[in-house]
Image 1 (cartoon, helix red, strand yellow):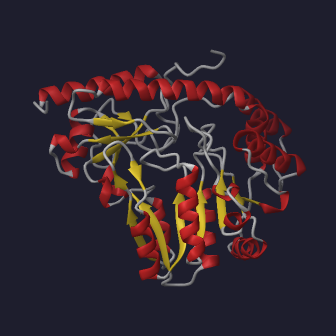
Image 2 (cartoon, rainbow, N blue to C red):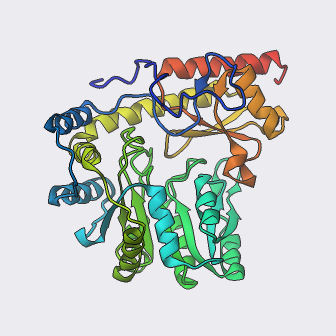
Image 3 (cartoon, helix red, strand yellow):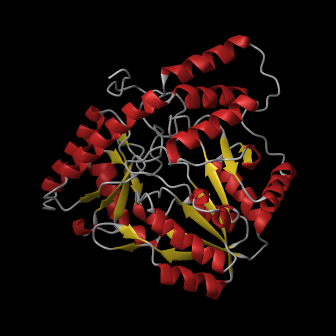
Length: 390
């Protein structure tokens, strides 16, 4: 391999959120953090070089995206997703969640209903509640092998609550679904039927093991009813660098969202973000290919490692986040956290924070060198045996 996905780096003392002291178990030593969604790999060296060149300029004045920025974004989407984006659709912004908040404010009023499909990325619920909108939940169904959308429940919730916006996670975090074309079309058709605008968070779209279908790529009617959010920050481990894009084909919706961004004095990517983003789109393909091979190997390792235990690991179709079904351990959510953190020394996200359907599950970030992953799995399996959970 050309790139290094094996070296274990010491990230302690770097202001890393991932490696901070656990707030409830501060005395647990040698804790392996596998919770928050950033990777333990260095980003592509071409991106590091671009950042160094920008730093060497020594002048960090006001900056805005140039024509090359938009061309690179358009080319990336055409190449990877066969999605033809018009330059006018692109609204650069600071980050995905702040853009979602702006879109919710621009396209709805206080007490309007916004729907999410849980279990789902927990800041979705926060951004709805914090902006004084009504949180409406349609639960995903677990059919035993996968998670699927309950279309009847989705439509009923939309009708009964006069839902204005669907906040859609595609690919889905934490259950790892990469939605099929037919699934997205059915969701989009329901939304069109009931005048519900789709905000589609597609930040994980590059981190997939099957084809990702951008929601707005399906038809002009669907595109006109969709705001898509994309970013390279998850793809290239740049979460500490701000920068994202809203893709908004509908001119009226775009004007409303831009007006809200202006009102809150929100800016787009800064000078360092632009350097990183452009380098990622220009040079990142080879690094991404090797990353995906590494992640797929890690996923296969975790799935096979837990066969025969009371933990079932779902192989994600996208993201580097694995959804672990721990219900057979017969522990409540508080006991699960205590077991994994205190007994195993492995810090993962508790499933219940993603919604009611996540109770009894854990979310495991497997974007780390295999050596770290092997140690984490060894600890968990050892403690399962020691606690006679088998």
